[in-house]
Image 1 (tube, protein in one colour):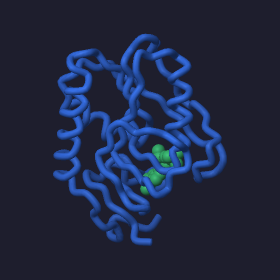
Image 2 (cartoon, rainbow, N blue to C red):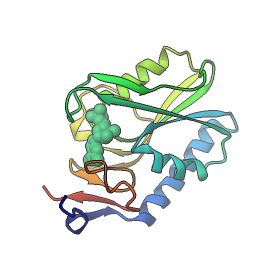
Image 3 (cartoon, rainbow, N blue to C red):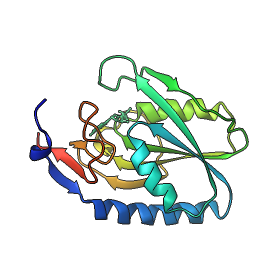
Length: 175
Ligand code: 5GP
């Protein structure tokens, strides 16, 4: 496999990412004002963001992991399946979905509708990156760290063929 790392351009440095996550963590803490919160981290990409976010928060959290995928090819099609479901009930609880990126929005739309059927007290969404120009599904995002251009990003949880997730910065591939 070619070495992509030499071709990557830095979009956000580690420091920029961490500073922005701190700001968002403080906003989330203010919004929940000491209430408890279930964080649902969406595997695999959001794990990196989730860990850094919750470590910067004061809100008491429970952590849940879910995995979903679209079942036709690599393109997001709207045909989503749950590969890993919740371990505990979210009924009557404040829930925050933590996702790496919203692109078309089909994945988060599906997740939001599914989780809403489980009767949480509240349901919000936090994303690290938002590619607004590519949105197809109508969905409200409550917390966004970075609005980005339509570029393919890699690093800090974002993979290229399952690799490079552990880069501490977010890079992009020149089109
Ligand atoms: P959506 O359903 O919003 O179109 O798709 C979101 C999913 O597409 C993300 O969870 C992520 O897996 C993938 N994705 C979208 N844009 C990018 C990108 O720039 N880089 C990487 N690595 N994955 C992306």
